Length: 137
Image 1 (cartoon, helix red, strand yellow):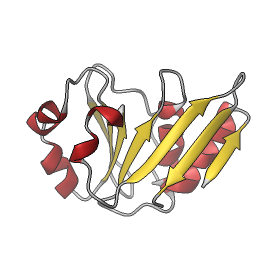
Image 2: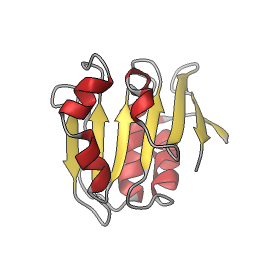
Image 3: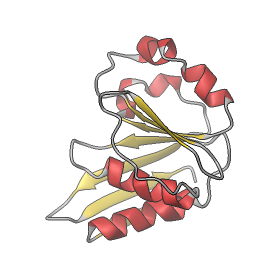
Image 4: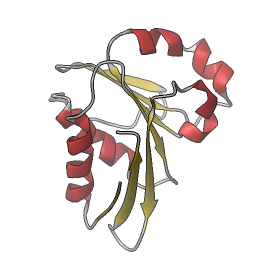
């Protein structure tokens, strides 16, 4: 499915729509350049999961955990070198904890994802417009 959003609010709304469909154990791999809207989309996804907290990018902490009806584990792998570093921080444990894992900069660790991973590609268009392609939901 491909969607074009015209504002940040619409990008959040599309994330929320996806979030409502996710179940414990879901993995969402986000792809997109810096500023493509990955964290904005994730904030909507969190709302769809029932997370009532502000979602921020975990660039410096690698992963932020949010409690909701289904826990959200939000990864930003920008600073990681590869899959071995992801496993060093306990990736397998996160997969088994019964939450939803959302991963920014997924291209760095694409071999670490389960087969049923949902892929979301975000692309900057003009201004606040974004193209969002969702595969696997």
